[in-house]
Image (cartoon, rainbow, N blue to C red; front, side, top):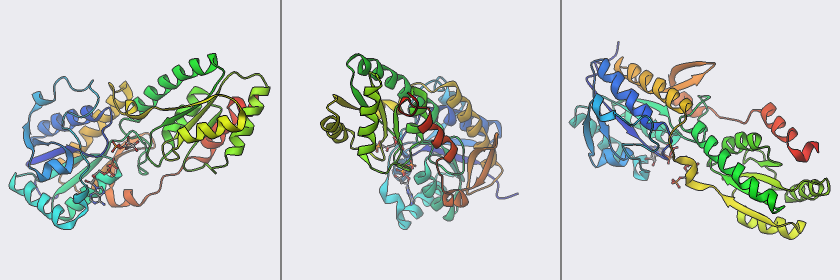
Length: 328
Ligand code: ADP
Ligand code: F6P
């Protein structure tokens, strides 16, 4: 058994994700249940450096499980990559009696957690990002809400696109990862799904698909484009010029990151938050929570950061086979 933990901190960092509040709630309530005090750190690593630290009790997390965003606020803090800044943050933790920190965020935030643990603060990461781009886990908090929000929005664009017999390029978030595009593309029956991991930038293929679909009588052509490829507006202009078919671009943007979390996000966040509190209460450090092979578990954060996530080849192949373009 490692050193005794009396007080832990919890922070959210990087892009917010629906379900982060459910995770905060679970961390706070399970830690208290374990006899450990909890402090909330506002605005991620920036707030830690500014000592934006508040005591939390079971009541401070009432009425938040259903809310999008994060009650603690979040931030990007580029200076946290510098060693003296990390040392300062660790000193601040010690001055506030914080023995360990739960970091809810993406892999960038995990790197900050790893740095803090190297300076003597026990850390554990919880995967909170709509992008699903953390290799060690099959699930990240916020993904389910984001894909459902995006799917509903795309269905709406499809209605108007069909009525006007247009081609629509709809850009979804995901930074450099194509998971939101892949899932939404399959779920809305898109004619083309462009993933940063796979796209060959051959627009002629898209143009040929659109023209051949139109000849077969299809009234719309949906292209789901991932943020990592981007340039949807200029792509739409080029495709319209090449096909003669009216083409519009819609960039869904931040709406995908907001809103009340789905049941799945609330559930996964609750279990992950509670497990993080348990692992940290046991005095473990340098860990992150994962969902793998149907189980919630903790794994080494350093190993997790070295893992590479790839699009499953079979799922990708299926995404190209089910579209109208491939079968009509
Ligand atoms: P995410 O956590 O969603 O991947 P970012 O990559 O923006 O989002 O990272 C969030 C924050 O984590 C950064 O603003 C910074 O404070 C911290 N961070 C990112 N990379 C590092 C790093 N290499 N070392 C220390 N801290 C980092
Ligand atoms: O990581 C979540 C995410 O929404 C990405 O999909 C996107 O690339 C990024 O954050 C946008 O970040 P910002 O809020 O800094 O514009």
